[in-house]
Image (cartoon, rainbow, N blue to C red; front, top):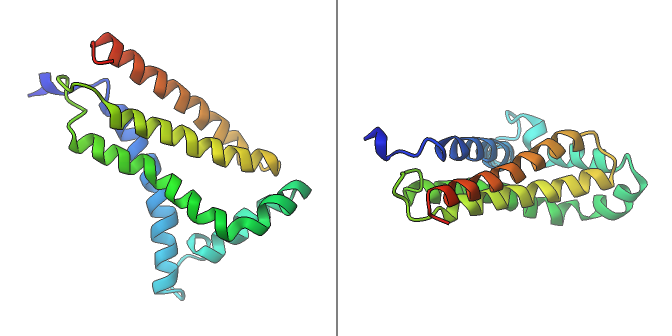
Length: 163
């Protein structure tokens, strides 16, 4: 049974799945939903108002962010939530399609998850860099990790003849 499992792929699925499950679904979807359902017991920082205070407060530290990004928060934040959920959704599909097995013909959903992760990180990094936010530092590291993941997946697929 263990011979069929690709131990080169599972760590990528775990990293992308857990990271974006926490940052997309738990922090955003569950936090906002909890804030809507029971605002008196919800942690304020995870509610819509809490995220708006934090993000707009960060953007407002820069004149460019204040003028360009802050007025658009209510339109941009739902898009960000969707983008942050995509890598996790793609990982779930990847797991359901058994892309973690050694005999997987190809791993398109794993690659889609890595590309979606790289894209959402780039979007977040753009807004944080534009506004001069301190969150940009960890996003640069995540961007680098995303690029390495894509190269790693391509390399594994080439080595195993599944490219």
